[in-house]
Length: 171
Image (cartoon, rainbow, N blue to C red; front, top):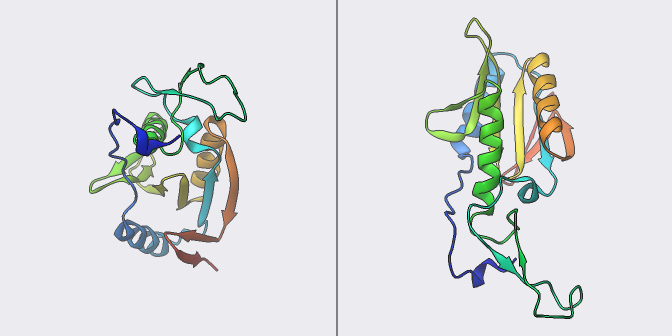
């Protein structure tokens, strides 16, 4: 999509993780002895988003549709639309909240999950279409099962990751 040509832009406020949250995430994981540092990348994240809340019509490139009189209404956001990131974040946020995760005050992209006794099981950071997480073995297994059940994941990496241009590893 050519978002720069949008006449009516959608709400584009899409939270992304703060660098300070990553520092806190790493510090808490080290203090609690979590040894399951992992990351996953979501394939075609915007196509797995919540449906658009507005009408967006597009024309296909001439290579696909030579008749330029056809227009198509999008159901899902495409990369380049102003509200694409927000629609994906809304889906992920809903998925986490429905499954007992809570966002941390000060960063809507840092989630925690606690057990019935209030003990921290693990943390997850969302940055656009990347998830970084650490916690107990059960937390990691349950999180991966949840995400795989609702989203298409392209890769999962264990004990190493790249976040906002910085490489991290856990030994």
